[in-house]
Length: 594
Image 1: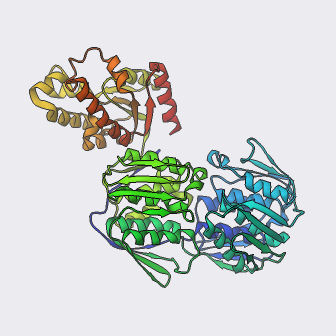
Image 2: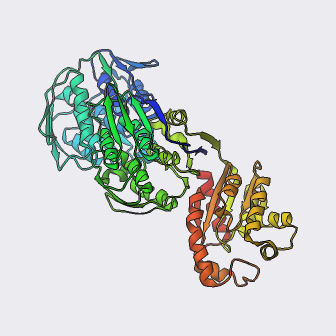
Image 3: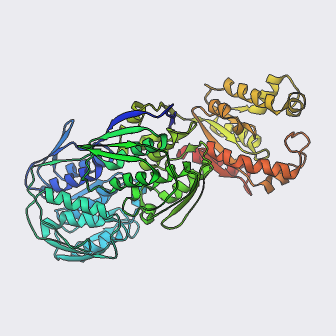
């Protein structure tokens, strides 16, 4: 697994960033081009994992697509598909899965739509129900209501449908884009979430020559008509620009974002209004916007119409002294990950108290600390927490390559504005065990080393060797804890470039960030999470443990270190009630998964 070490900006900067084309517009344009009778040239498209997934599926359906540096030419259409049965892999792209599901109902052949595991966990029942009501023949291959799905029908027989607006605006957009082919009236049951994304779909349809009757987002009427555009220009992506706008706000910098339009209908344009509430100045000019940052402050904000930026606002709120409440996040549970839960977890690592409900997060900011951030295979987690790294030293982003889903050049552009970005590869044969005294590090290390056929490095033994004393207790008595921590740092340097090793670290090693920087370089850090009660029962004799002064003071030290362990850990393994063998097996499996 790769990690990104991002050094903060040394001072406020004045910088310009050119923002890539919008993924949302690119995929909408690709779908409509593939339904068109004309050859269509798409200007300034986004090339990313999500757009690549859709292009690959359309090519499998017989559409000829020519990719050049700044444009895509779409020739032919999906109605020419001659394959009797075809498997279409949407990878992790929700728009590809949902948009193509509707398209596959009106083209020849048996079509099976699938993708990677997380995409298969995202519900599509509301859309399949709507398509079935229109006459589609669709079956679920594994779990009811979830991909993969098989579509047998090649036409729809009805022209009016009702669909819930509560789950995903992409369901409505999928129906809107096939509507010109069949003629369709779409009625919305309940208020439509992420409404601006449907507005984007309507705008794209209109630019492709389609007349849409929009009855206040409660009903849409599109008569059967020809899709006839020959060229479509993709505007810059406000979603991608949001991260640099947030950096400007947080670091009090002045950042100009090129390729963004003031009259855009994109949902994440609203993010700039939120930054204004925090005190930033927003200046639009032709095809660009400048953000003049003025720091952050807590706020109460409903982000129902731009939920993709909830993570970014949450990160900014972590720096603000006071309480921020963000509502409107009900759709986040069915994104690339359960985003509310992911934000909650990572902010806790950063010493930020927060609480979540089904659609909100409340953040008590102001005392933020660095941590190693898990990205949950979610591009927006990686980019949102990278914003924090431009202000706070010591943040590490795990699996930063996930940004390629929508913004492949994100880290390069981050480096260009002055944030030093260092990418390293973690080695599965280098594992650091951390945890409080009595957590089992010394017992687990040799068992794990034996399974993996690698060596053990016992930090305390090396410290004793360097000190020329007989025990840890002697070091504390003769030289004090400060000298002990210095010796730990020396020991960590000794193994800086060693691989194929299990490192059993001392319980307090996490209190020295420089030591941990050396110790964890290219290593997986495993936190043996153990309750204080279990540790008390294990440590019958505490005379040789100089920091076990009395139970209450030791308990306070235990509480203090828990957040530090979580900040540095790539993996946490609960040890209470488990055998050494069970714990060892769990570590091995979790590291393999990473």
